[in-house]
Length: 324
Image (spheres, rainbow, N blue to C red):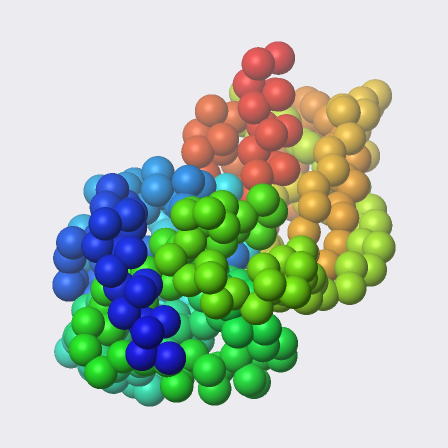
């Protein structure tokens, strides 16, 4: 186990990633922001969002003082919107308590920060000795040691922690999984632990870690009523903490009758547990009716609506309106 850690650490110093914008800092705010964004999202997708967030919210105090709508507007398109809501809630909690917790346990208590995310923040920001088990680390450990099951993988991750240079070792796990021990077509010839890899020796690289059985995703249908008047469009805020809670979208039930409604191109979007097929119906109003001015609804110029806190499929419809 000591040999495993030392090999990874030596490899990281020569071949590890150096160009990620959240590297080279011990600022817990920047590290926390990156780790939350990287949950279930590829590095290439996160980088531009990370830059825009820092430009608007350079520290946790500025983020906490913003509105949730401002936060979700910048998060729009990154997906898994509960992360954006939790990010905002955690920022307010951090400011209220006077700073970030410095232990893995304290960090894990923040909204949206789980065990592995908390460990990464604790390691990189506060030099704590803590084990991660993100997707990259899980793949490396599962293949090298032939270990299946999250409980056993967590035990292994804890046991493998070196006494020193935990930051370099943790970064090595992430980098090796992201650049060498990839999900498909891993570059085993470049791996520092390939000689002792159980999956390679037993021809089980494609099996480990064992993928979850994929069930056919159910199809959900929705009708979007796209009410327009005088170059403006009507949006509703989705309530609660659901899929798009806090975001703005089109009404899904008719508010009033309009002459000659017209179907626009249907939109399909994949989520973790289902597929959405939405049918937008363009409804041109001759005048703004009182029911359209209810709380939780707002009229926006179409160009402004494109940049508002709206989900990606809604933005696609809005862009179509703008082009038209």
